[in-house]
Image (cartoon, rainbow, N blue to C red; front, side, top):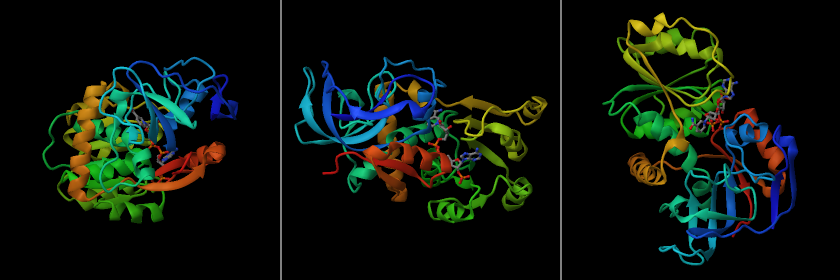
Length: 328
Ligand SMILES: NC(=O)c1ccc[n+]([C@@H]2O[C@H](COP(=O)([O-])OP(=O)(O)OC[C@H]3O[C@@H](n4cnc5c(N)ncnc54)[C@H](OP(=O)(O)O)[C@@H]3O)[C@@H](O)[C@H]2O)c1
């Protein structure tokens, strides 16, 4: 089969498009013919060696995807040849070969049906970002109707968090550096948008909120902007730390956490067990149905154009970047 092989860690430049051995089907696995797969920043981090996983090399990246069942391993029930299945966050693309390939063997407990009314491209790109957004929204327990601020809101996790938070009844403030993407975010459920590069953004958000403050911030960006978030948080405010696209957070005075009893909690979608991920996925689908939301696709590239797809992801997409692998 054709696949992108990563021969050594260090860079996505080390990927090569070539013939690769067919996947091995273990007990409990289902063999999928991949139709579409989707990129995540963590694929690049893994290639760069900036991710905890150390898979056997050569490795195939790619955590998300949708495919057609080609074979069913011993001990698997509930899947038939020809069924369509999407992959839910698990070892695929991390410790086991991933979806930047024509075929992949997936543990059956990491599969789910394509939701009613979703296209195959939409199903290919959703599970990792929606599960991440779900953990970020729920890890501190029930919030009640709250003000939720999301950084990097136009990206995969940001769009998912915007849609879920608005469907949960929260008042959503979305940060994006682009006016065009901010306009789209308002159609997806954001009540207010702001540009984190505008030095007055904190003032404009607080003026919009009146006597309220931010109850939960979901931070996909990190970097120097992190301490700005602390200024807009209210009493008992919580921050879900998801990503660090702008790099490490510089020093900040922890006294800024004291008086409002702020809490900071890390998000790790990989910490969901497969049962927890399946349960959370059902809750995600029920919540999305409330708002009639669907995954948002930024762009699609043929499998052989993975480097161009990574370039698009780095440029700041509006939603998800996909690979067309074997469209049916
Ligand atoms: N903890 C977990 O379990 C987990 C799970 C999934 C993802 N993540 C991490 O979460 C982060 C977001 O992932 P994603 O899939 O949403 O990424 P993405 O699709 O690449 O989008 C992120 C968005 O952030 C903005 N952005 C990018 N670089 C920026 C910078 N240097 N400064 C300010 N804004 C920037 C861009 O929006 P604008 O151009 O509109 O500003 C971009 O559209 C990544 O670091 C990823 O690795 C963590």
